Amino acid sequence: MIWSPYLMKAKPIYAQGGRRKALQRRKAGIMRLTIFGATGGTGTGLAQQALAAGHEVTVVVRDAARLTVRPSKPAESKSAADDGLRVITADPMDPAAIITAVAGADAVLTAIGPRGTSVTTVSQDSVRSIIAAMQKTGARRLLTVSGSIVADEGESPYLRYLIKPVARRTFLRHVCADMRAAEAEVEASDLDWTIMRPPGLTSKPATGRYRTSIDGGLPRSLTVSRADLAACMLAAIGNQATLRRHVAIAN
Image 1 (cartoon, helix red, strand yellow):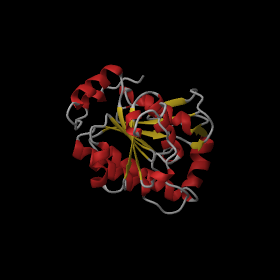
Image 2: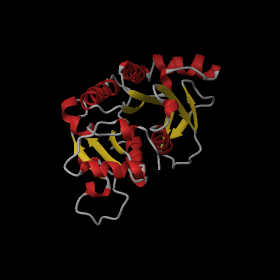
Image 3: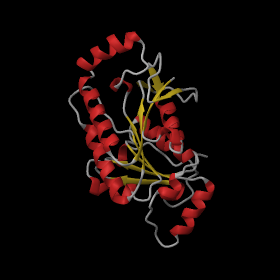
């Protein structure tokens, strides 16, 4: 189970009897996590792995019909929430619509990002909205997904001086611009943030054998599985070394 100091920092809103449940969660190392982008590959992995670890998970989606995440426990309870999963249908671009989702969260994780290579501001707009909702509710811990395309530190000369510059000028120029703008929004906030910078994402199963670098790049950083990225994000929640840092990851 992942320990996190954010079990003590968040300012949750509890119903009657909720305080006792909160104390029980802390003793058991259970976190209350809010996940955005849970209908995508990385977000699905985040939610599924968090549920399997016994955490209480809230997923925020535009269309609940597209959600494939399922509670890890047998379906004996009357509702998904009893199995640790709460589904909220809301527009993540509207801070007022997601306040309920982030209130009381020990950590907020977002895997919302561009689809395709056309002009987009989805990363920047969504993270700006999430930050506003978190600041309104007092939630502190935020983990976001960016991309290795935004930086050059630690890269081989081949990637640093040839591949990445060409990609930024051509087919990834809009994606890179959006990711950099989103990172700027996060870095300007007063939250306890961590920005993940994966390279190309694959749908391979989790290996548990991924490499990471804090505020630097990784040599031969070409791909990482979404499952390993999700596992790394969950492990980073309680890792003080990742606070207000950028984490490169690759298989």
